[in-house]
Image (cartoon, rainbow, N blue to C red; front, side, top):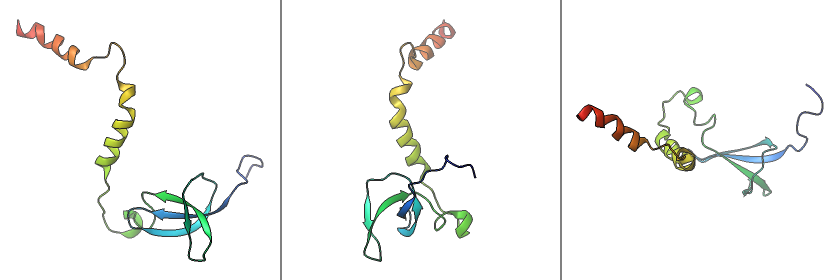
Length: 103
């Protein structure tokens, strides 16, 4: 590995799979504001995961429904403000396209 390109701030953190409430202790340098008390009585930073090896169909062998609709709605809601630019009126363009065909 190249020296000087990897972070030095690795620390113990608790990862929590939100889909099945499975938790495990590991190392990470990711920032988080949440903390949790682990089985040994110490407090560790908490990193929330949507899917892990305990819930992924590849590792479990079971097909599981993943809430893609919720993720898509969340994405569209977050980036809706960027899609409304000046001059971009899809409804107006559709009306203009229909007008010559009606005559």
